[in-house]
Amino acid sequence: MLGLATTATATTATAAPTTAAKNRVLCSSGRLQRWFQRSSVACYRISSPSLRSNFCAVKAMAEADTISILKAQSQSNASGNKQALISLSDKKDLAFLGNGLQSLGYTIVSTGGTASALENAGVSVTKVEQLTCFPEMLDGRVKTLHPNIHGGILARRDQKLHMEALNEHGIGTFDVVVVNLYPFYDKVSSGGIEFEDGIENIDIGGPAMIRAAAKNHKDVLVVVDSQDYSALLEFLQGNQDDQLFRRKLAWKAFQHVASYDSAVSEWLWKQTVGDKFPPSLTVPLSLKSSLRYGENPHQKAAFYVDKSLSEVNAGGIATAIQHHGKEMSYNNYLDADAAWNCVSEFKNPTCVIVKHTNPCGVASRDDILEAYRLAVKADPVSAFGGIVAFNIEVDEALAKEIREFRSPTDGETRMFYEIVVAPKYSQKGLDILRGKSKTLRILEAGKNEKGKLSLRQVGGGWLAQDSDDLTPEDIPFKLVSEKAPPESELRDAEFAWLCVKHVKSNAIVIAKNNCMLGMGSGQPNRRESLRIAVRKAGDEVKGAALASDAFFPFAWKDAVEEACESGIGIIAEPGGSIRDGDAIDCCNKYGVSLLFTNVRHFRH
Image 1 (spheres, rainbow, N blue to C red):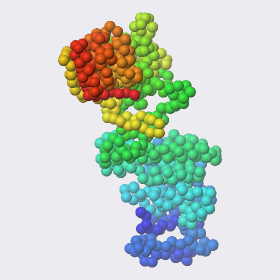
Image 2 (cartoon, rainbow, N blue to C red):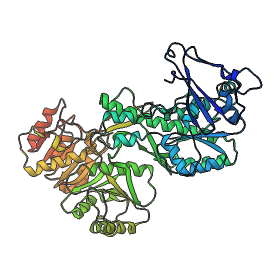
Image 3 (cartoon, one colour):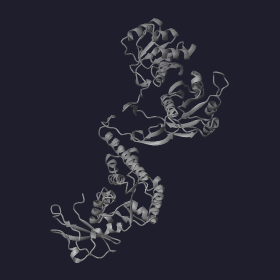
Image 4 (tube, rainbow, N blue to C red):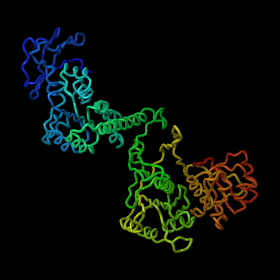
């Protein structure tokens, strides 16, 4: 890349080389051209038409009483001149860093816009081209990719041969490298960027310097985050030799580059192939918070945010704003996620209440206050201490209802919740909820986008699948029984079917008039889930709709017949059993409508 030129450096602070020494810079044919001079540094460029095939030889001077042109910089460095290399895209707190390093006696080497910003802040700067004797080229693609830079970063100070090589070639060492990268992530996630623009925003020189400095962290401090500037200056000021601090910065540097490369890889895969399941997959996670504990107090835990490009502005609990309350726990995140995913499915004003990731109450009404009351009524015992979610704004009236509503079990006990989650809050509504409890967590979340990749960990690996985004509008409800349902029962079946996809298998939901009456979840056999749902629905089961997340393996003297005998008016299930005929015959016997959806909703 740089093979068409040979460079040499000299400082006026050293003895002038003799004529004989100058003549040691030889080339078979060509001319010696003064390229440029900056301050006390002089650079020479040797060019010739025959350079491609007959490269110039640059020899160190042999005379003991002379100083090699090429050794000038390394001698300066060896005499105690400390160097810091700074090249930043995000220039936050750059003046603070530059002035701090300069006050500690560091010579600052920098590139392009970073150098200009430092000079504007009153910081003395040596530009990279003064060391490389080569200008920025290829529209800035090549700035720091040069032995005079990378040699100074990668050389091990405890290796004699390394230091001799630097001395021979006139390369000084770098003690500090501060670099961050082109804003590729922000550029490609902002939307509408052309492919070529995306390619040009891929940083090459930056990751190379970061990786080099991180590899040689025993001798070079590498910083990629402006939040570490203060710690860096404090470390340098104390003349410490804390290898743990250096390793931590090196880890952070490699992680920074890894996340960056992950975004490039994800974007390029989508631009090239687009398949959701690439041959290899990297998921960049960023720590949001350390949690008090995991599912249980003896388990340590933390919460990470997915920084994949596909998650940018894609909604979800991970990016929710917490307006009030205690810090979120491991189980809080799981339950809030379940509640939010469920309530976001409904188009009409809806309230969902979740306990242990299962919806125990769901209701849709034009009047959200009524929807809330009905959702609590479905299972007030389970609702107490649960998570309540809404798909519309929580205003003053709704906030008062949440604060004051008494449990239907005794008419006296105020309902208690761990979390309230909604897409937005009025200011008065927010103030009222804050007054309900100091611990009540109030979350404002964005709706999850469809088409996300769903990941789940198993021992030694991960399962990946499309998210289950189907709604009643996406599928046909095929009538297979003799009795055709009235429109109201069909709507009830669709509502129950939308609820049951959010209940853990084996799952049964009974609903009527856009309100969940009862549900059975997580039982090893479907018959037990049915019995739980029927018991919770009580007398309201008569004429209600029943939805099952999977087909019924048996009908007679089993779940289907028990459902019919309880008074259920319509059943919606996927179908697909070898005994589907029995289910149809059973429903015909009891005058119950039966719909096949051909869509299963297992949830484990």
